[in-house]
Image (cartoon, rainbow, N blue to C red; front, side, top):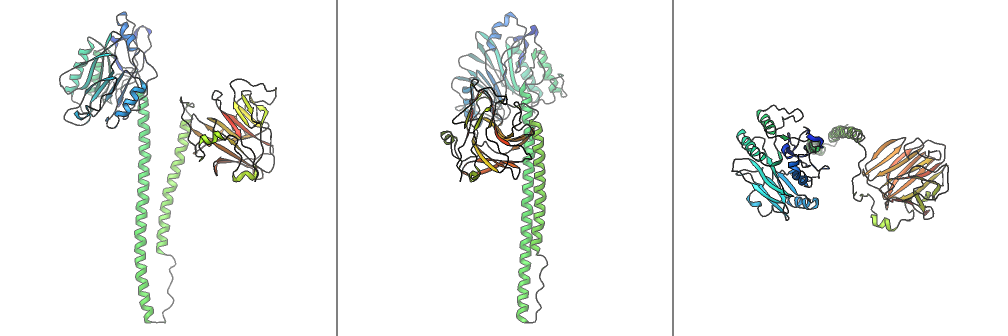
Length: 568
């Protein structure tokens, strides 16, 4: 059950017998069981809850119920109209291999009889009569014996089924309570629930639209809400804490923020359009006046040759109008840029509160480069051919400054994550983390090199002093600078002195590094058929600098390859 917009609320079940409680549906304590669900409002992108199992005191008489429910895989969603979502629902059900699917607000009617069925599932539904919206449905897998528990037409939008799983019977129900539902219809539903819970273990899910309920303290302001709490207690129902409440609230908060930003965008663009229209009207009015004056002066000139030279305008009214418009537009532009900077700071501070998240089965990253990944993979030793090649330097990886789990090959131009330690000779300068430096260093002049990065989902490319520590990560010290790609975050960043600068760029498949020591700068480029500047650091050092690299995740067998020199 839910309070405001949620199936569940924050009241934690306290099961007897020490069995751990699950997050999920509202369930009868008599059943000693709970099914774990997870849902998102307003669409069908539903994720299976991470927990599945049961709660209770382990009574012997309900052992079959416990075992049966522990194996059921279920989901629930508020569809807010199933229009154009049936295909998505069917694909999700078969892909997730769910046993029970509960839906509120289907918005179905008799015209959907042919389109609502799904192969392999029995459908039980109740459509709202004589008006739009509402409606509930339950899909149960055909391999389970199920029978609908029917009630007379009392206005309650609910569906109940008796489900037999492994010779144990349970009642599964779904209910939708509109916000303006009468107390009479509420009582009819409570009667249904009371009758069913007397003879069967009950699992109930639904949207009850009673936002004043505080599930933490089991209190409510409105009479109808308090009546629901009484029904929960009378039928020995337990509200289990569930993460979907937090998820949905976060989703709603972000939606509000996005709506606010979009509204401000619309208002700003409308302001610009109105000011532009007003300036155009003023300009047309001024042009009309000037044409009238020009015609009058032409007539006077025709009448006399002694007319003094026409007094020039010290300032064109149209120019003055344009200047006024530019000033107004600059105010709007400055305000938007200021808001953007503040949002970036806030979002950066927000993101730093959470650890990095690495989702499974990452899709291939999108690149700004015009060279497709397949082409780059087929040509791992491409020559340096950009406009910066006049400063190309021939650099190679140093076997003395490479981590033992990184293998160097291809004439010291490719470094690959190794599944086991390599047999390098002992070296006092060998890195203790997944990094490598080049043998060549630079202390004067202008130098350029390129590294192919398409074969790694996490990397850093940069320069560092020779004195960088064996455990110092690239870009986190005063003596190193780099750009870094983390595939788990899909984020490109620039790093120096442990300070991160977010770069709004996609993943480069090849990175060019231009070290201009006379200008005291190092610049990083995304290389395709042309160069795109990613970031430039100002450097102030008298020490020689070495090309340096970092590879992320030792389980992914990623690699970096230095391009061959091709000076022009």
